Image (cartoon, rainbow, N blue to C red; front, side, top):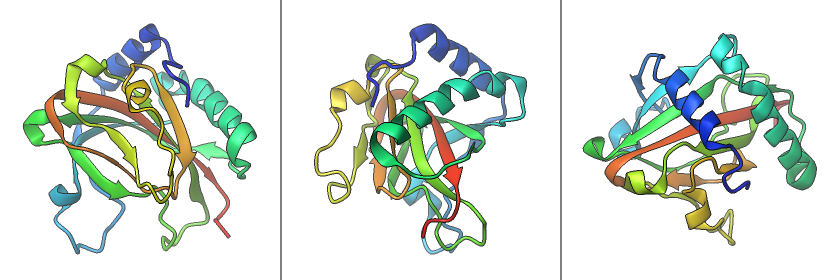
Length: 186
């Protein structure tokens, strides 16, 4: 984790760029239809396609964070960054995302998400609730919750770690989410 690892000006530029893209209701990777989506996740997202110029400007920065985290802590094989997600958790929507992981092991693909990144794009004072948390069986020593709420904080973790965002009760929480892909987990 890098507390306030991205400066305020860059955070503002990311939020401004994302606001120019189409907002949509967030879905989940679970396509089984077994649960009501709003019970699992309530948020709005904007996809930042990697081929767009605005997204291409931030890829080197995100790649540098993934590389440093991987070299210092994880040692997984990864090659690319997928399209990036700008997420809005709004109190008016009771925004949240229940415990989930970011890798879809049963999907018929030739790559898996190896590392996940979340970047805090809101000031802590802009919202209440909306805490990022790990399931304690995956991360018995949780990151500092105060540091996680600081604008510009970057957190990287293995994509198979269960994590969630608790309901936002006031205001709006914004985050940037990116994934480093690599060969199938074995």
